[in-house]
Every structure is written in structure tokens, then in C-alpha cells.
Length: 340
Image (cartoon, rainbow, N blue to C red; front, side, top):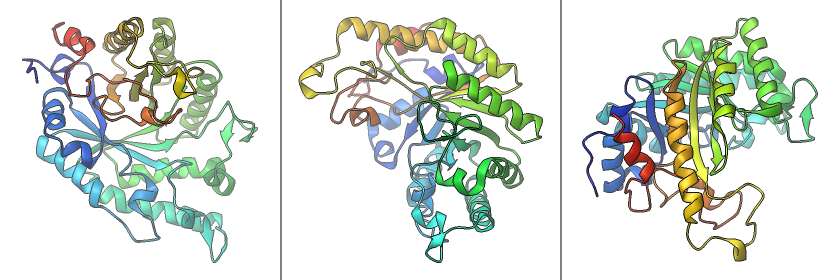
């Protein structure tokens, strides 16, 4: 592996944290460890801190993988993002049941508070920011609440908007030093941006302790453009919020293409590779111009493992990250690190 004098975390240390989503399996790879040590100042547990993984049964917690990741970060003196508390996916069925029936609102609130208290107590020393609420708005589905496109999840069906407010307030009490974020995808433009701004503005007006918004950044080789990105940053900044790009990966495909294996690229087309690298460079350079941007985290480290290998099309290679399958830096990394 080529060793560079400066890593991404050094280049952008005065602007924002540089991060990656990881699992225990990734951290146990020597090449991954070397890349993290050189380039990243922040880590996110890809799955290990989600509700169903941490508390698969009521009051029975499985800390094994989350502890492994947190202890790695402690040893390396790397900050962590906590991901996530309320999400419509990867949430255990027991949470919404009580005696075989639908759980009461009171019980759901108590269960949520207990979960927040236990998780915060364990990780308050290492987690500097929590995605308290994840993907609560869905402007693309017909199954939503008419009030600002809230996703009609089990959380919302039982607790309504009130449970969102409660989660932030409860987390503030349990983790008073942590930054509290609302995290979502496609919230950098269009109807999703508008709905998110309305939601966050109303929550802030109501005194709900929200510090920032996570723009996931599951993007494409040809999106977003500079105008879109700047508009999103400036719109959220106008609310007084911090911004973090929390789950960045840049696919070689558009959302609507190559659904069948016969249409898959055998290798990434050079033209798209070049566009992808320019997207990465542009994202980092634009973010460095705004004091409100505090973190850029990629959803994975290298192309040897990414969730896009199975989503939205199973077994389709995407090459969406900053390092190749052998953890070698791609041109975007080389150019950014040479920019000091």
C-alpha cells in the first residue's frame, strides 16, 4: 500500500472531521486499520448501534460488536457518531407489542427512554454526535401522514410527532455533551428538502434540542451538482444547524438503470469513474468553505465491501468509495491530499 505523508484527516482538520462507517469485520483487516489510522478522524457503526442489534429482546442487550468498534475508536483516539435511535428499519418487533397487542403510547415512551439511558451511559465518552431520528420523512411514498409527509412507521403510528420530540429531549438529558442530529436521505433537494426544513424549523421553534442535520449523501456519479449542494448547506445553516454528510457513497449507476445482470458494467467505465472522482473532490472542497459543515463520512471505506453491492440491485458492483478493493487511494484522495 502506498503511504502518504498527509491523510484526509490532516488536510481537513481545520474544517471538518473525515469519517467512515465500519463493522467489526472491517476493523479486523490490517489494510483497513492502516487506512483508518491515516485518513479518518470519525467512525460510525454501520449496523451495530441500531436498535435491533443492541436490544434484540426487551432489556437483553448485546453490546459485543458495538463495544468492539467503540473500543477500537478509544484506542485510536477517533471520535464516533452514534447511529441510530429511532428508525423504521432494524427495530425489533417486541418494541411495538405489549401482551400480544399493540403497545401503548406510555409503554413505548418508557421503552425508548430506557434504551436511550442504557446506550448513552455506555458510549457517552466516545460518541460526540447521535442520529437521534433517522428517515422520518418520506415524500416518495403513498403511505405517509398528511402532516408534512411523516413516514407512517410503527413509531409514528403509536407515538406521533410527540415521540420525535421526546427522543431528542431524552437524549439531551442522557447525553448532554453530544450533538443531536436528524438524519435522512434525498434531503438535499426538492420536496424532501422543503419538508425537512419545515419539520426542523417547527421543532426548533418548539424548543426541541436539535443541533444538526445529517445529509446521508447516497449519491451518483452525476449528482449532486455544485448549485444543489450549496443550496442545501445554506438552507440548513440558515436555521442555525450544523451539517454533516453522514453516509456518502457515489454510485457508478443512476438509480433507474442496470436492473438486470446483463446490463451490469464488467468494470467501471472510465468516463463515469472520472465524473465520480470529480463529485468527491467537489463535495470536499465545497464543504470546506462552510463553517457549518462538521463531518464528511463515507458509508464504508473501500470498494471490497459496500451495501450498494446488494442495494438497490443485488450483486451489482458499484465502486462507490474513496479506496479500491485493495485499499489503495483513488485519484480523488490523491488530489485532495496534495492540495495542502
